[in-house]
Amino acid sequence: MKRLVLVGALAAAVAAGPALAAAQGTAEKPKTGAAAQGSGHAAPKAQPATEPSPTAPEGQMALGTVTLPKAVKADGKPLAAGTYQVRLTADTAGPEAKGQTRSLERWAEFVKGGKVVGREVVTIVPQTEIAKVQKDKPPPSNGAKVETLKGGDYVRVWINRSGNYYLMHLPV
Image 1 (cartoon, helix red, strand yellow):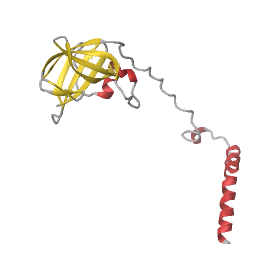
Image 2 (cartoon, rainbow, N blue to C red; image 1 turned 180 degrees about the horizontal axis):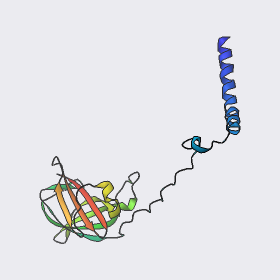
Image 3 (cartoon, helix red, strand yellow; image 1 turned 120 degrees about the vertical axis):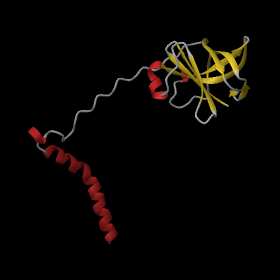
Image 4 (cartoon, helix red, strand yellow; image 1 turned 90 degrees about the vertical axis):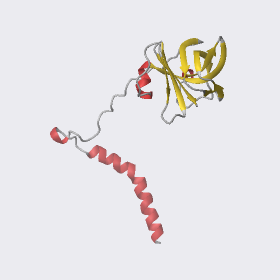
């Protein structure tokens, strides 16, 4: 019997909830002066303008020359220490990463003596976004930085070209 009464009371409260809320909303007097400040419903905050999608160069493009201080792996294959020309390909990397603009994950090739000797996925970061991604000092315009990261497990190749940064992380 007690259960029946409790279930009935609960059902009545749930059914009366919307009607009670509507009645309270219409019966409430508008507040004025100091009482109105900081209470009640505020206008929605202005939403920031939607940022345009970052763009990357289309097609193939020479990125510059880099010198790798030690042997690394590019796309899982060994790449010897030495100086290489790096060029961006038109091939997008896959599978697509969630939240990533597809054209900003591409393949870069390491060229030595006119022959492609390795390739690796490069992340393209527009100049306006680099502070969100990287805290180190970027390479100069049309320049490159190659550095071994903390722990010595990866070498970062960082190229600054045509208003974009190109980042590759190569395991040692």
